[in-house]
Figure: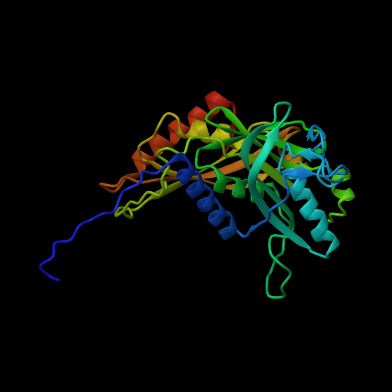
Length: 317
């Protein structure tokens, strides 16, 4: 047997678009479930009596039953039904997502999307936890970051049946919608806390998309941190401030962390109407040597001046 030469009859099959799409969705499921969400599956066909977001659904000519009369234009219709059933069953926390296809009217074009719904408290009610806060928009935003790896931005818009709505932008393209349901709609579902929803498109090229993870060694030289506190208009977004800090690129600036915000009535009393206070911590480091205070002061002063010049902020000493 040892003298018989072996023959390799295996054949390599190159990866296809369907393979890459399957791998992408599998990875997305793992990330969302690791973030504490449960996956649900709902029907692609909608009943005649349905929740909001399904008003423009494409009706079937010959429906088999009253529960399957139209093609869903959005995944949110099914998720609201899931929320309704869970609330009626006594659930105090609902954090779910669904990956599936929708049918855009009027042509019925199929699109892949992922939808997320959060309602109730972040943690289940257990006696040893010190706090048990309800879900907010930042929890929803964190879940959205699991979906797309590009840099995302959020633009405030007005939408019917939503108390707070934002469009999700990636590479200057509109890829989804996120926000909080209106109080009137949430009360119809008997929801005792805010209902946060998001729907994001999954129709993008998967070619060349890998893990996206990068590795680097820890810095051998110490970092220096400096804080910037400023008074800004209520309408000024975090993204605008972030872009000014990082552009143009400062080689010594390693990272920026947002750590304080003062808004509402107290901010109006201190800074005037339409104003808020925000603060950022900037970390400076060189990977080849120890920085001096003078070098950091020079770079920090440039960033402060840029914020004043481009955004008109008032710096707090």
